[in-house]
Image 1 (cartoon, rainbow, N blue to C red):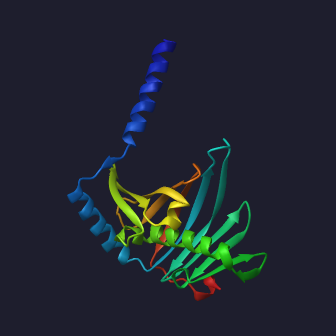
Image 2 (tube, rainbow, N blue to C red):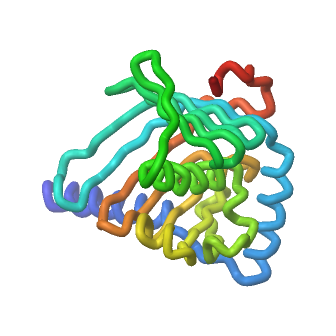
Image 3 (cartoon, rainbow, N blue to C red):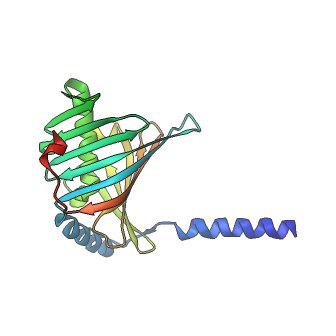
Length: 211
């Protein structure tokens, strides 16, 4: 009886994994999916949501989990961590200006750190809005399906992104008009997964949020 139970559990795990596996889209399907996603996300002007970020190190078994809120409006982005630490990254004018907000103070990021933040901000903004699918030369895009959901695999083409990531996966919701999860495979072997919840699209966001 115990052996049968173990076999059933293994079968359940196997089929559970299979149910979540990705199916690669044909070139024609991929083209239509990218066009549809771009059209849907182009209509999104603002996004505000909660996020959970889980970082899995290749060297350490323990996972690091952070939570916070994300605000996007036009060319501005605020990535605000609330736990375990409180600080925020504010990006204005599509990455031209980067600020760090901590302990009630806001300071402009400069030098090498600013360039790093700009690169990360471009990826985050391109991911949450779907703009990364536009074929702007930064990434090679492959499309997959996972049940009713669409998944985009982005492979960096630019050297600045290759130094940070080997691939990035964008998981779209059932309506295909918003990204609900971003999985980043980092060049050092680490993986960062960001899940977005409580999404609010096209609701007014005060300019003071980005101050």
